[in-house]
Image (cartoon, rainbow, N blue to C red; front, top):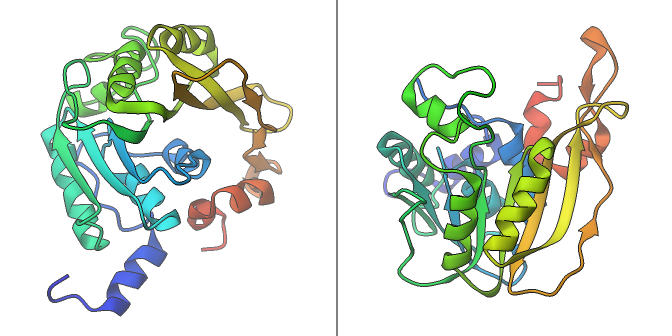
Length: 252
């Protein structure tokens, strides 16, 4: 990167996810994106797509974990695309990650890829608290694309045996499985995330494989928090699983 020394670049990467630019007035990424980046396991699969990439947080976290990857981010919001590319430049990953503007209902890559990651909108229109601003509404609600569109776009973007890795709401699990089935994506790995050990799951992370046989591994639940009131903190399990959350561990 012209004009920026190696030490500065490394400091920016160590500081991640703090320092990421986010769309002004738009959706702010949350821990679900960081957890998904740690759930994702591309393995030897090096070329991927990030559908609904937002500011690029999932792709950039994946690159920090596995530097040999190459990813393309896709988002319907031009401002999200702009800041995602700026974040890639700031972290010196512009040669491995670039975002483009596209609508998953019609966008397709020029070549099929090894894996697709996504944190799609969780809620149907009319369900839940309405976000302020069009970008936030698009990120949280299925105002422009439903899960089935994301699954179909992922399937058409993947090589045979390619992986589709995403996070969503457990309450919509039956619908998610139906969308995967219709897109010929077989769920192979699943992990539930709970706020506390005695609470119901608040999110589910799933890895599906294109044209794979039946059989799914259900991983142990991930418990996010322990303690009560002001003593609430992230569990050691969570911090080991997703070191990016260390900036919110209460010791910064």
